[in-house]
Length: 223
Image 1: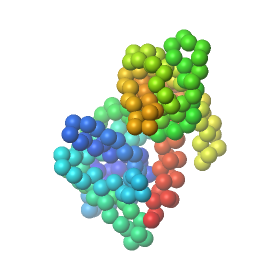
Image 2: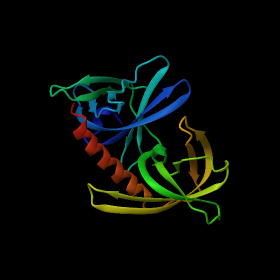
Image 3: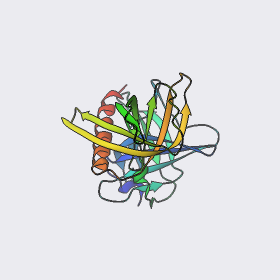
């Protein structure tokens, strides 16, 4: 696929490669300029500053996500932060080559940020935490203290969310094996889990959640 074949409103992710590590930032296409072979995308902000994706040993790929087809990966894109005439920020994106179809859609991470109840294995004890993000293949959650959970153990978390823009409630049971444990500076613990079973309806939730978030963000990013 050529970059100019994409359409406005398409959900995309910027996949940033830094010294062997990978960080993903969700975005959305604002405008497409076929004759000039570039697109305009929603900006990403951190600490009220637009992320520029500039620096040594940094390369950026772009993943375009579709509801009824495989995602398309544009590798090593040229991405530039800029201000539009209305003073809002955006990115211009130029592709260095055509895309290729990939199977990364299942790994697209959707930020959740909801409170959750967590159980370990067959234990009856319930712990409170924050469900950070979810994808088709895994989820991450944060607990306030180290409870002795170990890699390989099974966690059961509840995803209960209300998307105000759609006036729609969602509820899912998530089961996953702990594959990553990270202690934060504030003492909290992040557990990354790989799904042990597929969750029906979760993909629909992820797409709706991300579209609602991007629509809301596009209004706030006109700075």
